[in-house]
Amino acid sequence: MTTKPTCGPQSDPEFFDALNKLFEQYPEAADKYAIKCMTMELDILKIDFRKQEGVAHIEGGRIVTEFVDRDPTRSHDCCGWHHGECILKCDPPWL
Image (tube, rainbow, N blue to C red; front, side, top):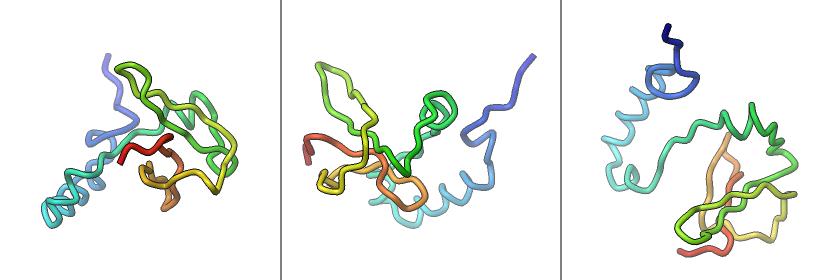
């Protein structure tokens, strides 16, 4: 038995078709961005992005994200955007 994915092109084909057209229109931007399914953060971990934000750092050969209370002084050099708001940040910024 196969189930329909909850995220991705098979789940939201119209969105991904529009996104692909947008990336074709702006190829230089396409290399800077990625689409991420938020199932782990929203459905499994129950992160409330109104109160918390993810902070990513490099640990060995891994990128580790911790969810902490929002801090407006934290850098925005690297962001993961959700509904137009930066919710995942890099700490320290490496850009």
